[in-house]
Image 1 (cartoon, rainbow, N blue to C red):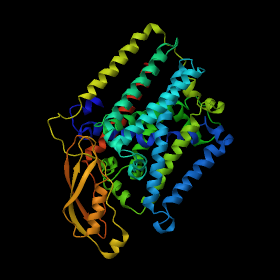
Image 2: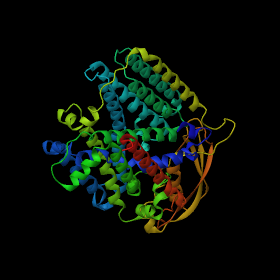
Image 3: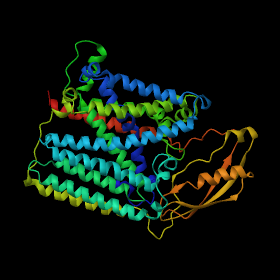
Image 4: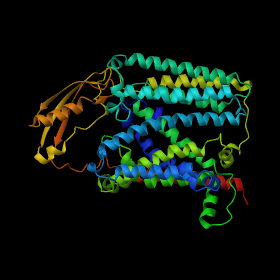
Length: 514
């Protein structure tokens, strides 16, 4: 990913975007449904459904009912409009997903600690939890605040922090980077001083530090987002494919027998989740992108994906998207809760099939090599970006839309105009907005000025930009965004085909000539 973005001032316009398109199509939805698949489609977790019905049945049903109860009623049916409900759930979802990512990092470090035969080491467990929550949670949240990337940041975060945080942005970034380096060093020293230290743990610690380091760089928002989410998706899919591989065969039921044959083959589970992700992409992408974002579903499904976002099914699709997200956070905590003996028994394919391999100090130079690689990668990323002498066009990263009030529609207020936005290049904050072409109405001009004053841009990408605005009494449906040629449909399918061919070749090689 670093190599694909190298030499481009805007990583989103580099070949990295094409790679992320493929990864999104093949892993995003599959990872979200992976814990649901483990809970309801495996023999390994069937006993848990009977013994823990509240955790595995009642709570998911309650979450689903709650999301649909919030989104299906009309604006006037509840105290809050649908837009206000969407904002509230998006803020809750952001908090949950931030903790969810940090918890997965702690789980991965715990898994590698267990395979190094150190699962009972309380000191290492506490260090893992501190590192995952601090580096993978708190520092990422700080980076999101500085980049203006927190969900609906103006609605909650900006009200909590005084104005000096903008002027102190560089100092905060430097302090956060220093803190990241310090806690990473502590983790690595503690690991290497252990008699049975784990090379996978060293690699994971370094990898997590690199990702958070990218987040703290002001020009790397898209690059960090791609690496951060892709790592999470692929790890979740890999864990789900290994977990049920040691389950016992069912005694009856054609569907259960079919799923069992799937579950004992990790490659088949991965392939199934990838296909599921590809098919469901346009349905779930309805709630995943802002107006200025890229709709990858359009590249594969064309007008069908566009129609889903503008159809009467939109409230139900939004409810479905949020419900599956919250259920994913809940069930991930349930299916990987290794402190529960019943869960450990169900997940024996993950924790039991591979014997723990201890790493002695005789191979410690490898760790030093990877530490050097960490520094090299950081230096490589420092080269990513445009030359300082080249003025880049402003790149908006937070774009709240002007509010068009219902009473204005009743009055028939409409008009077109152009706003000139002045940007502080060091922080990306808007320092001034004025209408260079009025819409013809002071109320409409005021709505435009209020919205554009909240915009946030990537630092160093331009000092001024003109933004056209149109208010209409009957909003036009959004136009299709960057509909790619039909050949884009082949990209994820070729990946699936190559994956299948590789699996078949490996199985044939294992079986031998006979």
